[in-house]
Image (cartoon, rainbow, N blue to C red; front, side, top):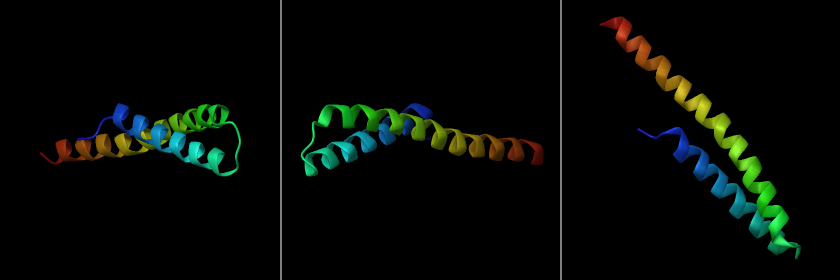
Length: 67
């Protein structure tokens, strides 16, 4: 089972790397881009984790009701 911390960290890392490579491509200073990308990635990761974990909890409750 994947937990919330793993989801948020993975999405944050992916967003940071994407903005890093974007900043390198357009030949800008990478630090502000990586910071903003990491922040946005953390917000997206929290949203994704909330959706995924909410669905898992709902499925677990449905299984308990069937028993």
